[in-house]
Amino acid sequence: MAVVRDLRVLLRFQGFRRLLGVRLLSQGADGVYQVALATYVVFSPEKQTSAASIASAMAVLLLPYSLVGPFAGVLLDRWRRRQVLLYGNLLRAVLACATAALMVGHVPDWLFYASALCVTAINRFVLSGLSASLPRVVDAERLVIANSLSPTAGTLAATSGAGLAFIVRIVAAGSDAAVVLVGAALYLASALASLRIAPELLGPEQELVQPRLTTALTGTARDLTAGVRHLAEPARREAAWALMAMTLMRFCYGAVTVMVLMLCRYAWSSPSDDGLALLGLAVGVSGAGFFAAAVLTPWAVGRLGPGGWIVVCAASAAVLEPALGLPFAPAPMLAAAFVLGLITQGAKIATDTLVQSSVDDRFRGRIFSVYDVLFNVAFVGAAAVAALMLPPDGRSAALVVTVAVIYAAIAGAMARFELQ
Image (tube, rainbow, N blue to C red; front, side, top):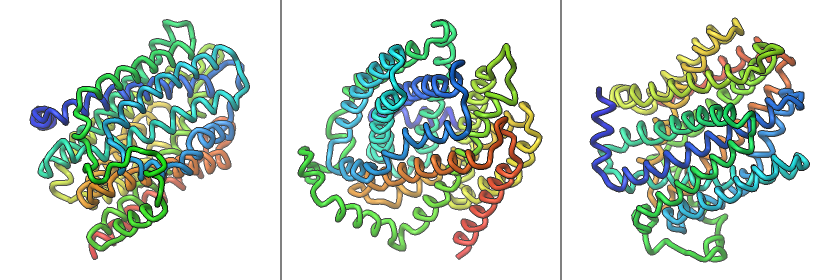
């Protein structure tokens, strides 16, 4: 199998192997932590969840990071990225323990969200650092393959973490705090795994490193402006278009996610079944789509190019998403979860490759942080739109059609750019 052969080749690179280990543990912990938050906010018996409350939770957890995200990019271009992975995961382990304590203590919601926000904000540093570091541990020839396998393996680790969270929740008699503590243990393991990587391996270059916070933040606006100008240069225009396309695809994915949450919670639940098991199945099926993207994307990019593959992904979603989503039945919607998992991850792999291969190393950290901020804003915006369009049971043909139209517009715009 080609994907197994490619993975064996990449694993010969010691730096890649160790960075992958950090990613798997970190994103596995993310999966555990996110399921604990979702079940605590959405599926707690004492909570009457609505699309608006889900949107509010997403806004509280994700939007504030949009204010500090650009600073994260500058810091990733000034601090040793290995140190970001080490201290970021250590801090998340401590904060996750604090979240568990707040769950047990039944504190006001704002205090719980504040703790969760801190974990999520640090997660942005870690994920951006992992993406910015990848070109430092593989050669240019294998960058597309590495972008197919590494982030996808991380997504599968997050999916496995989500599955582990469901199991722990059953064993712990529904205790979300116990699930969070398992996530904290995995964050600690990821921090320890990063110690196997040499501090200077992941960059940036020695002359760019400024360890003091005040020094690193000086001139942030100037540095960010330089990064945007760098991305806007003609040689990097395809990467900029891909970023815009991926942001809109993230919006579509977010809208469908909120709809599926509401369908599982109400339309497909019963007095004896709160729909959580079906949600877990949907997460697993979507993870299978991510794996399929890792297998298909290197082949597709080799024949169509990264931009061409994004066109195919968006066009496929425009056709299949309404065909599978409009029945509002569990089986077709699970098929839609697989398709959207494949399409979203396939487009992301192509976008990551375009950004990494086009952007100079000294700008890579801030570009990926801005990329991450766009992801957050798109996801929260999608949740807000879904809150306005979704009825209490989650069935909204208008939302499904709107998402399909956006996918079609993405495919048309990217196709037009590729033909220029």
